[in-house]
Length: 584
Image (cartoon, rainbow, N blue to C red; front, side, top):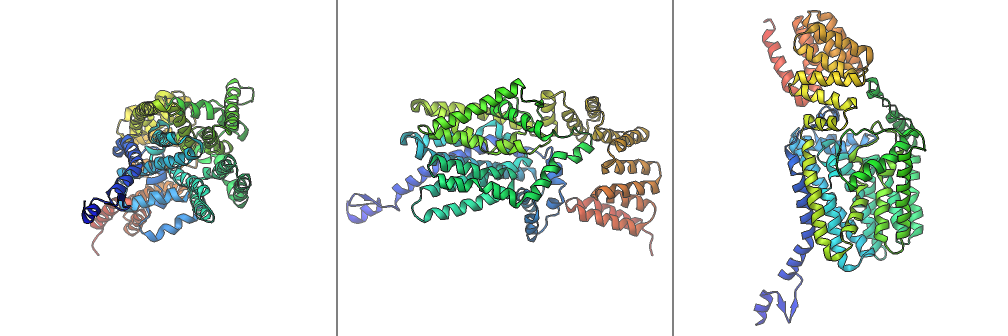
């Protein structure tokens, strides 16, 4: 072969040139795992693209003025003035800015974040395997960990549920920071500090995304200990302390506000557990709910029944303590010869699983909160499936097939509010909230009799549940049964005088009875609690009926300013008002 022909085929003197086809094939092979992981994650969650907005998506996204009034990119700076969770809100606002409230776009972003996170798990697992596993097992282990993350059903709430994005977005920065630290630890000389600097940036972004990122420094400190860098571990472990001290006032206010849970308690919900009882209950739930669901992902539930633990002698609590202590002991014993196991246990336990035990939230268990903690389970399960290298591919494929099929079925529950709360009601029939929310779902779907049945079931469990009375009042109002509507709404006012919706609907009752001045007073009362679009729309209607055209037009303009995405309704009323005005 002559020289020109040899160069054409990528060879000269038997040496393959780095820029020729052989290297191209090598690059493709290196990219293949990431491509497989991304395709798998996308395939498993593709059925969520046809889903709508559910549950907290309504108030947190659709009715959030920070998002629905986002009309110019210059407004981005306002999100960084938010004290908590600024980046998730910014991500929702940007999605709205480019695609409007198209649920498909919001779900597509969630899937993309999850796919990236799964690839990051691959990178973390590969670097961990490089340190602690035989070379032959490295790639199989890393791919198994990433694919398990891509398809495990416990992550469905963080991906299929749009509002769950806060957990997956936090994980994106959390995993990136951990990966950069691991990469930097392998670099010689000063180059490592560039990687560590990038890790600090990602860690900061994780903290701006969700408070649970405070555990990141402890996870990195544990990693340094496993690597023998005890001085670096000691310094890193101090970061959460300084972070808490720098935000002590804000964290204290958040702790009190979350613990009091005033809006839901005012609406008739049960108050949050006291800090001591909450801590004991969360420790129990960490094993009986979260670890169980990682191992046996059946009966996933958006609203599980969690029995409070009131004393340390509770048998199930003691059992869960034994399990957690066994994991800690196992991690310590494995540190010398099975570092990968210690690292998996570390990232499972020193994670948001720990952080949430200190914040008395109204819901002790919520599956999206363990999205980051799942990294540890991914690593441990990958280690187990690849332990016998001969059967590693078969074991991994079987695990992915089983977990992926469960996830696809679980995603369907998040299709809409009816399917979501039917599932929750079936699994938690003694809780009031599934009945209340299922009633609202039926009501929104026009199934009014079914909605009334659910509301009556909800108040049979909790007779002080004001939203149930409000929603029943709205149903009676739609049926022109003004007397029944008024009775239900007045009962709601007695139970929860700080809910604006009661006064708004009482105003509509008053309009139906031609008590227009009384209706205006009720709307003013509602506005003193919460200034909303619907208040000004109704005030405009009342003032138009009273022939106070200029004031009515002002109310319609105010409604349009509050909800630009719903401006069409206000504009239609303005047009009708213009047609009704007498000629000058």
